[in-house]
Length: 346
Image (cartoon, rainbow, N blue to C red; front, side):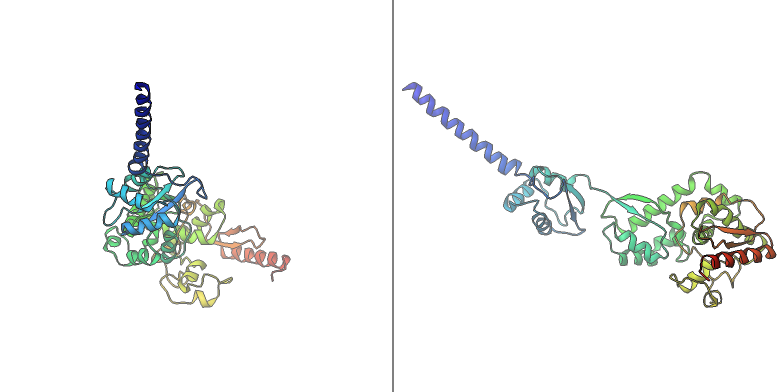
């Protein structure tokens, strides 16, 4: 009899232990994120200003949470619910326990994004590119760039603001605000100019960093050959030093905003605009594009020569012939036309 009672009590204790373990797993630890998610991890975006119900709807729609009552109960217990909810971009791994998921969304690290800036033409293009990677849309970013007092406080206006942006890949949090984006770009701009003696090199040329950037943007649009950029920069720098008009085709194209043109004509070069260096001496009011690092460094390390003219070779190489005199330039122009004829392009 005694042994029988021991068996009964043992069985009851085992059942109780299993029940306690189940309750602990369900209501304290919680269930797991499904292990059969379509990818190794899912990215969850929680917008700025989202409430708790929006977060729940997102997690259910992505099949990350199936037991909604349990998720709500654990969220209450773990003090995850707030108004508004914490925003951001979070990576959720399959098999993550529900309490781990909640803790991760509540105070875990965000999954950053790589924001890529390339050689954009206009501020609108910069805003559109940034909006591909961070939460604010292009309108919000562009409006900030055009209207916020921070822009002038940092020393920029609408003509010079493009010189703030250094093409590169930057790691951002997805929920970065327009202000945060500009502040980060200013930080990267300062870091760039502090490196490799760039500020001193600009001073040696008697140019400000913004003026270097503007000149570099012209070089950027004149040649795609990095090994030719220092020589091209030298031509324009020589013209500046001599008081000659730059007469840069890309500036007249920019003035007309005729970026798809295949040929520069009087329509461009006679258009009255401070950006048109056929009509106005000196540098234009600001960059005509986002300048690459190679073009900026080409200006800072400008090749020392006497060339003041250049002409495309016309042989399909993308390179140019350079000249010191107008007579030499005219001969190079003839070579250009002859090469086009040989290629059946004239």
